[in-house]
Image (cartoon, rainbow, N blue to C red; front, side, top):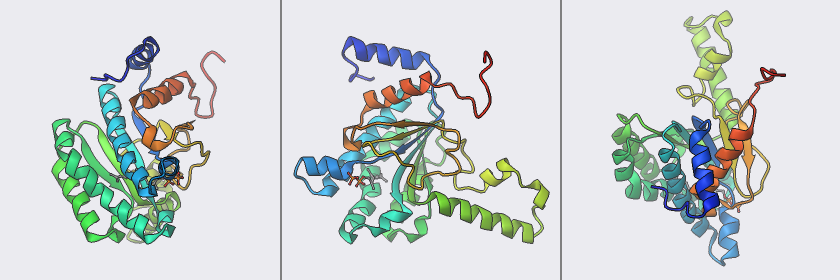
Length: 256
Ligand code: FPP
């Protein structure tokens, strides 16, 4: 249960969100961990660790809504390799830290773990714990919990183009067959719909090479809240904002 929603205003938020249109796929750029830690005179990595709790809270909040089917968290970008090696090594321990604590909950709640990104470049212990988590949850068909790990939107498009080229060369595809849907099926998110809502925390107003193709018509929501402070109430505020938008996909609304 969502015990966090205590005040009248919060309870109103909860019931209006439940009654509205729930995004099926929510993508999240978790930003501000370093600043959160700095404000507390803690090492940057303490912010990343606290950020894992926010993932847990979001998942809990989303599950309560029943209709969120996919959540994609940007955990490590292809550009994050530029960070100091000590921070990279800490970030590579977080999938294990998360899964050791949460795998049981994922199983109890029918949550399936997925990855977008090239995990072959990750350290063995990180890759193994992820592969094990994916294998154990493969039969679950509730929320699809995705982590973007060693992910870059431009690489995603490039690799899809290369795979399509190979299929063309092999004679498995004809040039005239390649439309937007076929192209999208070659992306790392090929088995998912595009995100309905993108949330980015910490006040930065960028996409940062995340899901570039897939975000073409997503609603974007930016908040100043730092990721480790982000909780179920913030998630519901983002969804409430999404529910005010009119999604026209470049067309007109019926009454216009
Ligand atoms: C951005 O904050 C955050 C990241 C680069 C990493 C986010 C990863 C997690 C919260 C955990 C991933 C967990 C699993 C289970 C895969 P920042 O360091 O750029 O913050 P700053 O902009 O304030 O410095």
